[in-house]
Amino acid sequence: MVLFVSVIVDAQQLNVINIEFQYDEHIFIPSSDYNNTHSMCEVTMPKVESQDGFPFCAAFTHSALLDNFICRREGIKDCTKLDPRRSCSPLDLARYHSKPYDWDYVGTPGYKAPAFDQYKLSGATIGDGYNNLLLNGRCSTRACIPWSKVMQKYKTQAEKETFIEKLKEAFNEYHKNLERIRRNQSHCSSCELREAEKALKSIHSAGLKNLNIDDIQFALAKDRIEKFLVEVMSPKKCEQQKLLTVPPNYDAYYFPTNASEQNMESVKRKLNDLVCKQKLAVGFTFCAEVGKVRNVNECDAKHTVAIAGLKRVCTEPNGKGECLDLLKVHNSWGEEWQESTNGGWVVADELIKRTFYEGDALSWLEERP
Image (cartoon, rainbow, N blue to C red; front, side, top):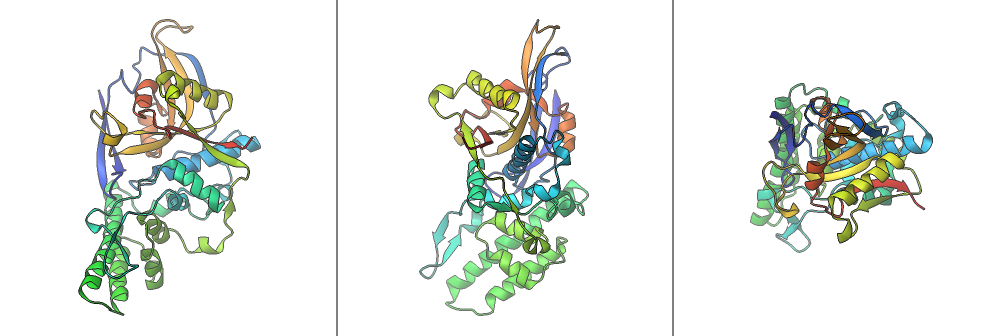
């Protein structure tokens, strides 16, 4: 039994939580008995990155799929060498992977305030991110917002968790205090500025000392916490630089699309067609929650990765003996996770079961017919 601890973000709240995956060698990680590769296919992918505890797994996957799409279309064999000026930053894509919050009516007509006791993330699917970017058609590039440089000042996981908590606290406290003020008095011209100054002090203490009061007021005005995070963490120069126009004439596609496709063999056949035959990376959304979860409605920790390869391994040469199907996962949990799973190769059946065969279990980008 191999225990691997990964820090991810609760799908319902911006809270850092530790998820413990117990990788039984016969469930997730194949045992050393399966040491004969019978067949294998892989697609070219960008460098593995870590989302560092932020709720951006769908955005990181989206960025990786876009890179794979461009490399495939232009014949770039090593996608790690794709020009960062031609790659969408995961941080910028995070703004597209969100839906409006549920708002409770508070105070005067037209004023909308969030339910602050549970300041929830939007719960958007990866498909929402695809569609939002397609509608907008542009993104800031990795050259302008390189995630590694955004996070490089935070050396340890504890520092990263503190950073996330301070940002969350600044956003929540600002809106919670304004809601309380507006309930108790009809007008306060200086209240927003005062609360914004408090938030700015907290954000400066988190290490983002380059922000001024105008910056923070603009960020706090966002209706979604993902957008707030993007605004406070993105360098100003990106606003002035030319944005990248995403590749034209492509669309997002999904599987399974009907009940007859909601089974193990159908998903495996589709993955084989997309990855091995068409050389496409595939978005893969599954339940990452520990313990027995009977259906998708019981899952509080969905996770999205890219599938970048398929492999069949057997206990004997030439496809004989006992065999297992493996998936190569391109994960946004960083190089450490990839190394702990022998390059991201995990047993296919268990991972596919955790999709519950939802309609967005598989997603990919393809040129329109």
